[in-house]
Length: 218
Image (cartoon, rainbow, N blue to C red; front, side):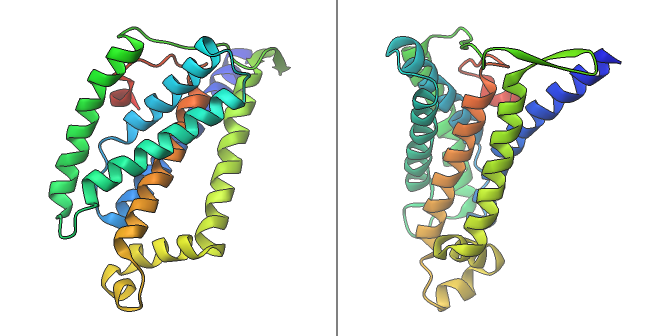
């Protein structure tokens, strides 16, 4: 029974990390009609930056993870500008561009962090549930994912940018007619996808060590 509880809780935690990554993937596709093949790369990048900030720079937990998330969001915005920034770029061409960006990122990641998996320590301590000893990191991943997804719901329903992205997802032509900058909403979607991917990366790296090609698994 304890083994079942352990598999269940750990599976839910890892699934929450994947849900964050997938939410960014879906947000980008719904707003831009582009399948972002670089989405997994953003999660890996976020984890790598957090690792460097924590291990190499000696920054405390929280700050290091925050830098990883922000870095992934910034790179996501750059990827978006490259993929859809030029007016008239068809979705298929943008798709191929994101695939090229994902492959090109391998070289940069290997040059900076090497080709071996990296990780850092999880939240210290564990807890006992029905006889199963579980990492507190599982609670952090699950709680962080829930807070992020709830915040995402508020963003889409209560903010101008969120409502604009929702309008573009519903009808891009009608959104453009009423004055919504569709391309800008697409760039925001890429940045949001980067933030969500980076959050998934920094939450999962203590559980699942990341390497330059972990984006394929993700």
